[in-house]
Image (cartoon, rainbow, N blue to C red; front, side, top):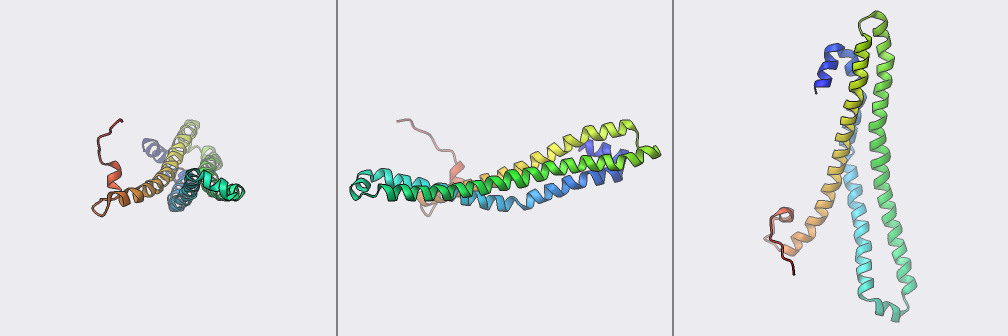
Length: 193
């Protein structure tokens, strides 16, 4: 916040133009957070299907062998794994390619705008070399902060999806008097057996 205030005091118009791509990228990252949460839920569901399938197969290994269903079981495992891989890849591409590259390219765009707009002000004399140095120093700090915020929002949406997925079975185990997701974080004594 201090860096932005200093930049505004030096040149308001240049500050607004330089920070606009970062603000747009941050808003876009916030809007796409729900989509990232949805992709995370789908990814977790695909992983859950594989876990359920493996649990069933390992609990009935002899039955699968007697029925001669090893190839069918392996084929089904490959199908489930391919579906999981697609979901994880979709989520990863959305987060890494879209969100991260959007935020990084916004920082590069801001730097480019700074270079393009500052030279005119420098020719007129209203923007000194030291002002330019200060802007060039503050811009990566601000853009890194915006990128960290965007990635934190994305991580929060992913964690929220995982937390919701954990809350459903816990609520079913605890019965009708359960308080749902609160039960996941409630203190309970641990016992070692």
